[in-house]
Length: 82
Image (cartoon, rainbow, N blue to C red):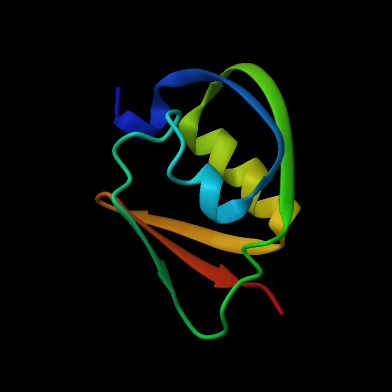
C-alpha cells in the first residue's frame, strides 16, 4: 500500500488550502509548488470523512478549491482550473 492509499480520518473545518497541505494528515508533504496562475490559498476548505485514503482526501479538497493536484514524491503541484 502506498502512502497516498493509506486510510485516514479527516476533520477539517474552514481551513485555508495552504494550511491543510502541511497538516498532520499529510506529514510527508514537504512543499507546495504552484504552476501557471497562483491558486487562491485563502479558499476555506471543510472536509469530514472517516476511513478515506489520502488520495481521496486530496481529490475532494482539489474539487472544493477548483484546482488540480498532482503529487510527485513529497511535492504537491497545484494547478488552478480555468
